[in-house]
Length: 113
Image (cartoon, rainbow, N blue to C red; front, side):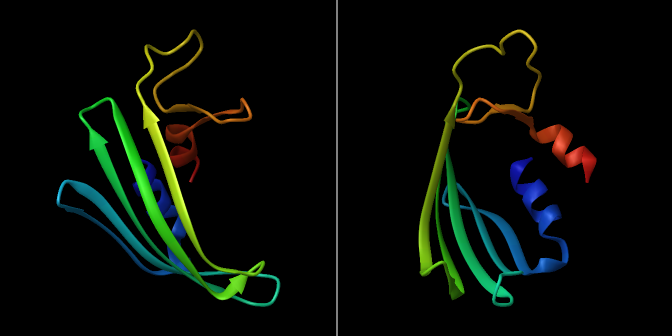
């Protein structure tokens, strides 16, 4: 759902956005033109998400910016998630608790598009 939402949000900004399953990983590649203070920035990205059973995942990726953004022309990114137990009271499927404690729901975000 998160990848699909990203593809939908990219809309006309991306000249390429592909998802594929290769060697047991979900592979995403994109080329997008983003507005920047000095004009548009071309962002080229590649990420791979691997699942460990149905209880956890990890994603690694690499992003290139042309021209550089705030002095950076490339960045490595990573994220992970794991099942930690049943939802707490008041939570529903799709809820994510961000490091700052804010709760967002990916399903609600996709529906609002």
